Length: 229
Image 1 (tube, rainbow, N blue to C red):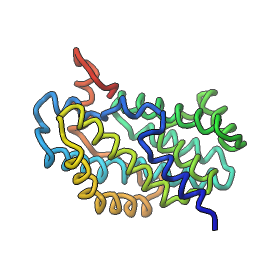
Image 2 (tube, rainbow, N blue to C red; image 1 turned 90 degrees about the vertical axis):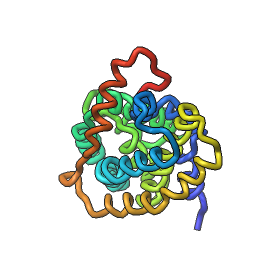
Image 3 (tube, helix red, strand yellow; image 1 turned 180 degrees about the vertical axis):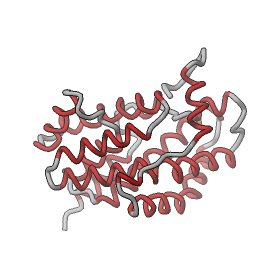
Image 4 (tube, rainbow, N blue to C red; image 1 turned 90 degrees about the horizontal axis):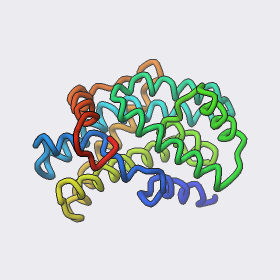
């Protein structure tokens, strides 16, 4: 049995991957600016909210659907998952961030290797048939590189959490040990989010983070911004 899919999953979850996630805070910057996050406990609570009410209920559901469709070479199914995720992602900055990082990941993957499924998907995005959200691109890429659906979900969660923890280090001066402790504490929540997504279809997708949505809208109009979202 080859270890290549495992190594590929590690690569897709690595913050070293040049897809622009280091410029995204998904609203964290505005939470900090308004004094709503002041330390480790507040940060973990916010990340848990993301995982339970957005990542597990929307992003991973779309990722799973895209993975299954790409595995069968059904590009319309990938595009359907993409459009559904766009429909439940309310903040404009989140939509922009997701399409930006999705485009970067898809372009990078196509530079590394040729795949007809990804080429077809990219053509559909260029034609406006799909937005190219990062979780959906990740699902399609994982399927074409034999990374399992479950491993792709874990990679998505890990990448999201470590990305926001990296942003927190810049915004809150939280140390490396504290961020690693937060990541460790969130492992059970990640597993719960992945399990929750397995029980949902695209018709069951939902995202309910009202305060995040409001502060993201405020972030769009902020005079000074370190992050794109």
